[in-house]
Structure formats: structure tokens, C-alpha cells
Length: 135
Image 1 (spheres, rainbow, N blue to C red):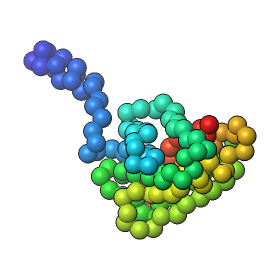
Image 2: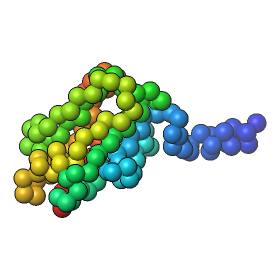
Image 3: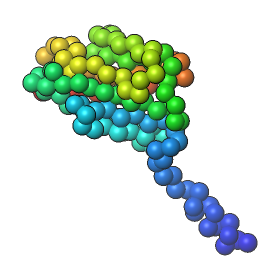
Image 4: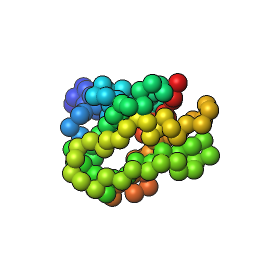
């Protein structure tokens, strides 16, 4: 009985990321995955890079709420002073929230750090997705 309890306790201490459960998000630039994040597993800050040359690229973001799309979704870009620089609203049932990288590249002034946030009806306070680094 003690051995069974010890084995159960040991197995319960491991958490494996599951693409079918929990909140996850993915960021693609021109259909190439540049960032995947399992919200309940990793707490590390995330970032992705763009160059001024790929301003014509398409950025696609998929946010998964435990297997469901969010309702009344928003992406917000903020500068280092936490001021809203750009906001996108998505009301449809499309899997991806898409926009042109030019929107991000044009928002950068000098070496300013930009932060990308997601919010939805299921997550009204929002969640930090990633820092955007423009080279």
C-alpha cells in the first residue's frame, strides 16, 4: 500500500504539455511557426523577431482556450510606456487572427520594445503573448 502511494505521488508530480487541453498560443510569420507557448507549463517571457524587410509578411496568431476559439478577440500592441500603439479586433470564427507585419514594424520607434497582448470574452483582463523585436 505504501509503495502504491509512493508511485502515485511520483507520477502526479510530472506535468506534460497537452495540445488538447489548457491554454496555448502559436505565432506564425508567413506560415512559419516562430513561437509556441503552453500557458500552464511555461512562465518564461516570450519574444519573436521581425526585420524591416519582412514588413509584407503575414502574422497569424492562434490562441486556444482549452480546445475552443475565444469570443470577441483582441490583439493589442503596447510600447515601453504601456501605451496602446495598435489594436486589432476579431469577431469572426476564423482560427487565426491575422495582420501584416508592417503594422508591427511601423510601430517601432528606434529601439523601442513592443509588447503584444491577447484578450477575449474568456480572458477579459488579457494575457501577455510576446515581446516584438524589430531588427
